[in-house]
Length: 347
Image (cartoon, rainbow, N blue to C red; front, side, top):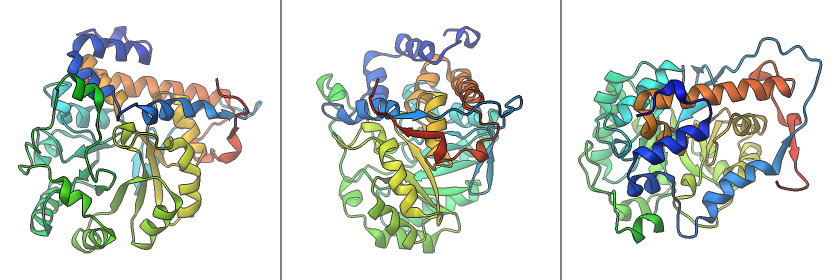
């Protein structure tokens, strides 16, 4: 492993992960569906928005703090739910939870993990959100929810954009399939169950859990409005990191219409291609409370375990503070849509 002190830029962390991980595992972490058009669009669409920097505004002290569901965030970057994180490092979700707590942010744990919710909660020093793949019946779901509640998780997140598993051709061409069941949770992946999900299941979750409810995988204003009407507390804009539907829009492009449709009735978070502090600042300007990072966190984990994730978050925080200073924004709480505009030309 490369010492984390040697990581001065985020691309160095990605390269270290590529050196450390097998080709199969690195491509599993980094790839997308079919032609990977959505994957590329997530990244490239960041350049569709440019800043309108202000000057002479006293940015000698920068405040990057935010919050989600009343939980304080030292920076508006959280670790997205990712399955099979033990492939990137043996500590997997345990390392991710510890790293998030050290940087004052939130780890979102996936149903697909090698550790149990109880084990992750015991390792964490900060708040946790549990991301649910609803593969079982209501009896199974209620039993799992009670475990998550008892372990101290602060919210429940239903993922709704996996009616079927995307064709990730980097994996298929290598005949590599990392799916081995839900391991620690102990139930096989049932995509027929996921395909049958409807807003009735959202209503059931609202009635069953005392935790705030997040719905992950919203990409349109229509679904954002429905989510709010069904009592969802957080609308999570996501295209699954480009890993499910090829030729989906970039999430930073759909974020404004979702924020407008929600109209302050729920909080909004987003993921999909956010790999720089400037990306994070654009998302906040467009109305997100915070962003989640998946691939960048996986690369940090592959590069140097917990320390690699900590360094990834540190560098994102550094880039964010510099971007805020150079655009005249002393407090994240004051950032709004006037900070950005659509670019005439993409670079």
